[in-house]
Image (cartoon, rainbow, N blue to C red; front, side, top):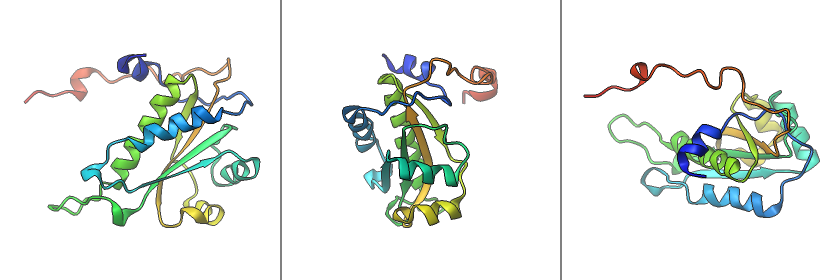
Length: 170
């Protein structure tokens, strides 16, 4: 699939089959994260794959937006490792982690998997249930799996602002 088609076909999948994802597909998802660009190539991101029933139950304790996905990829960054813009001290770790998140989402689509980006979670509970992530700011818990046949984009997915409200020429 070409990039434009991937971008157009990607949607927030909120209904998954109860089917595990093959190891080679998980590795393909991790591969695109590994090669994702980062500001000044600082590579501050950290990634956790969560597939065990026990740890997926912990995901359910920190967010209601788990959608019973068979795979969660947690994406975070270590702030002290990220590049910081000199003029205003803006830390770019969240940008780097977001690039990784979009990369994994597009690769999931390419692999025939569904994905939804979840940033709505209880941070304190996340720290309690996932102490392994303590050094990081977590940006997303990507919920990934084979889409249920009943899965479809939300009704607002195709609602786009007029181009004139987004694009400007200087």
